[in-house]
Image (spheres, rainbow, N blue to C red):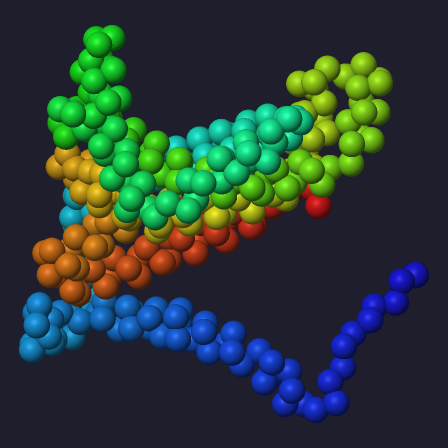
Length: 295
């Protein structure tokens, strides 16, 4: 029976000193902004902060009566599912292919990592230029085959544009973790299955993919959070929430109401709702999805 080894400090204050820097970062960059958001969500103030009035839950009631805000939930859910599923599936495919490459493997993997170094706003502009209805090279190619692409008027085209840009931006991150997970799997397990007559597809789903479940679960959580927060710059540069508000995900609608509509109370309430939604999704994932993870 293994004996658990525990570190014991001679001074009671030393552990607190060691964790103090991290605790300070958490307090300053998480708890303090979250507390400020909750406080401002129960206030009503003008754009210049000269008139402040306590209104209780009125800001939240306004949100639930706003059809545009409620539609943003469905938009965000569709967007996050498409980004997470597409990003993980494509990254896994690329990682499997890269794991089999013998010649030129370093160059191949380096090229796949490059998109992660691009800022989200730049990624949005790049895809916007490629799919611009009048001058975009991809939209021109689509017109030659009879497909009239115009994300300025077609909501499905706009959603496809921001999904492609968001997946392209995040795919390198997913690729790195999947490739590391594949390389950590003992080759003897796959070789033994091959000797027993298992086909490549059967070997992948029965051996490789279950052993990748911890990596897949981690990336699922990361990609959901990424779709909710880090894609703001992509939406802002590519579609600005249009056409209409069809691609206005929650984080972009929060920005629009705060900095363009100058509705500070409603935007603070939106930030609280967004925080609760993301925390709830994360808890649900750890509560139910993690049960299928094989560590």
